[in-house]
Image 1 (cartoon, rainbow, N blue to C red):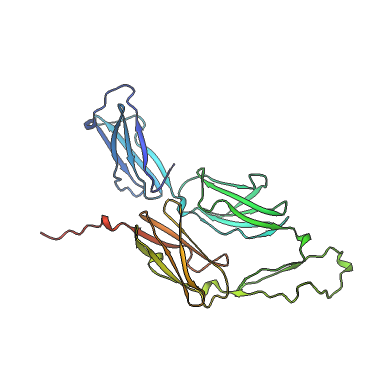
Image 2 (cartoon, one colour; image 1 turned 30 degrees about the horizontal axis):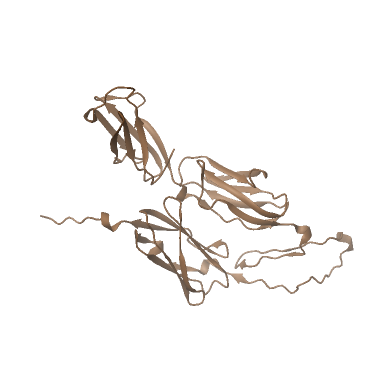
Length: 318
């Protein structure tokens, strides 16, 4: 298995024979049957073929020497894309209560998904909701920070590790969500150290009445070249209008085609509008994740196709 958008090599060993470049014929075809450009190099008598897979799927490599297929040809390499994996946030929870998050690897290609909770000390359950889409469940055994490491083909995801905090219900009187989305059901719990029979029907809880702000992530509006198409090595931006969303923290994350987090700069404010700037340095499809109080806004993750203007050629007739 090979990662997308990263140069990979195929080595042809001579076993002591003398190879001539003219006697070699190497053809590489991509997942859709398209020809894939490659380079052939001499390496101490052996040959090295280098190419860069750009799409998820099977790449077929035909190698001929003297008009004859070499043993094992055609060869197949399977390309995958970590940047295409989408992981939902992991929210804080409670000891001995299940925690959940989802992983979508449907567009990532073939590979092995590995999940470890607290260095493998806490078991986890993976439920396939549909092909390529999984729901992960684990139950914290102790209060404190919980850590979830996620790997795909032995490579950590850009968002890994996920972290959250598990509280001990016996130490809390009220567990109340700080922000509640509109049009959704919200609950809270009151935990008493007394037996149920000894608790009066009306109890004054410290801190009551509690206030809980309400937010509407679906009302957040996103627009700009930074979530559509941009040029490599040039600053791009997009605007966020969240004046109707309520008071909530905005989180923005930009991931390159290679799965790297790209630095972002946020300016403005929630009332007048926010501007997000970033500079993509690599050609390919970037994922832009926008969350309002940890909840993805409508349309997130957005895709931005980054191109290299230097590679654009215009041919004039004649």
